[in-house]
Image (cartoon, rainbow, N blue to C red; front, side):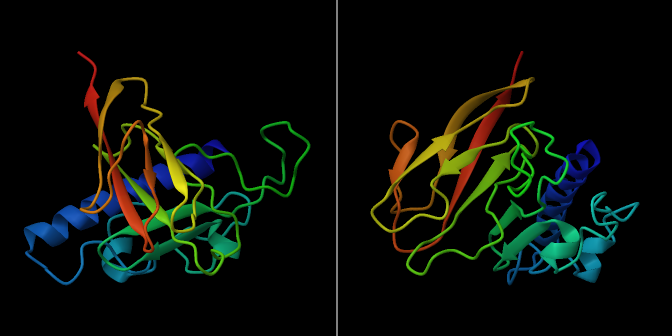
Length: 189
């Protein structure tokens, strides 16, 4: 489980680096790779992250091999754990649920129900926390509750959302579209 979680953290850091590189190169058409198997993205890794449960690369577009589902339009991304908890690492006698990885959303293996939309969570700075949104995906009009979950060296400071989405008391009403929310943290002094 620790190797799997470390690999997800490495992938999230590489996504941030990729975005920064795209901005530095003034590439306006995309900021995140549309696929984890993108050759430019794969160059950011010293070693290929391997799913210890399947023995396959986690930079695959096949969630059965990688254990994660990555969806991106280039401007935002969603990284969700699909790897089943076959060792029951959380000791709850449920071997069919996704692994309890705190750094990525647990989306399950099914696509969203028609008429529901994803909340993509971004951490600023990267790895400063593991924010969650419940429910996710959500139907328009549902109240989505956000939880910051800061890492040990950080404190949560604020949420950032696109125009038209107002976050009050760690929640917002889901619009009829996907939403990207940024959890902003500050380092503890």
